[in-house]
Amino acid sequence: MGMQTAADYEIDGTRLHMQILGAGRPLLLIHGWTNNGEIWRPLATELAGRYQAIMVDLPGFGQSGLAPDYGLARISGLLLELVRRLGVDRPVVAGLSMGCFLAADLLQRYPEQFSGAILVGPILAGNKKRWIRRGLRWSRRFPPLGRLFTRGVRSPWSGYIMERFINSRHYDPSMTASFRNLGRRQIRPEAYLPMGRSAFQVEIEAVLAATQTPVLLVYGEYDKHARPEQLATLCRLRPGIAARCIPGAAHNSPYEAPAACAAVIDQFLASVPGPLRNDEMAADDAIQLAAGLQPGQRLV
Image 1 (spheres, rainbow, N blue to C red):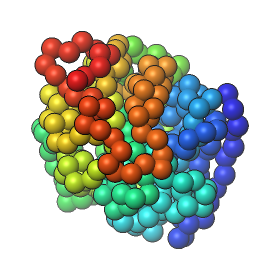
Image 2 (cartoon, rainbow, N blue to C red):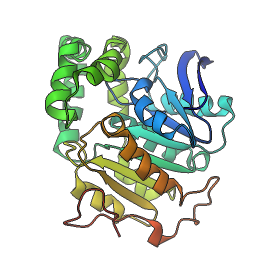
Image 3 (tube, helix red, strand yellow):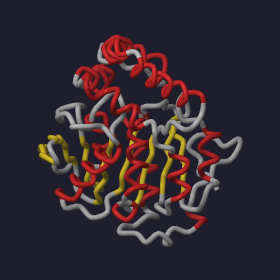
């Protein structure tokens, strides 16, 4: 499995907790809105012989302390400073669900600091993102609604409902208890909605069009949040954007199908040596989405 370690870093008034699993090329792993760094453990275990997985708890999530504010500049600055303190050179940044927004923001602010990006289950422009943004605005306008929403998110019942009917293809109560509901219980109420309001400001499409960093988009065959037709549009933006489907998985592919996720990451990063110049990834190395493609097939 490789080296494991855990540590807390005090950065600009915020205590950040992180775990490292494995050794090799560094990957900064950013979790989603209702979990913590532990959500990455099944995938990190698969990658441990080849990569150093840095699993960070965002401020107010998991074992990290609260941030003074949840503006994007603050959150991205904390993550970049963590990378610097760890002494890793141009890691690949990966985000899951909401974490994709934060990974994209890091690329936008600090493009020279990351050799690649992996966005797993990105929530792109469309009805779902509009409704989430609308709900976040309502929660600010009507604080009791926000408190009710946050209380519901932290409940184990909401975790089981989301996993059974929305996020997972194959519902596993033990996995939900270990990797989803534990993370929900550890969310600090003061952090949940402010983090969401900031993250959902990021326009992933605009960031990917503007940066030359190689990017892998990962989505589950049954993902109800990341749709193939949306990812097809992103793949056409420029060379260097890749997309792969994880057969049999839904939104939670890193722990629902960790071996398959590890395989597509291996394949992608084989063409993205780091440190990487922006012009080193040729157009024909990108994976393009096409109509009628079977899950798991390479896109050309």
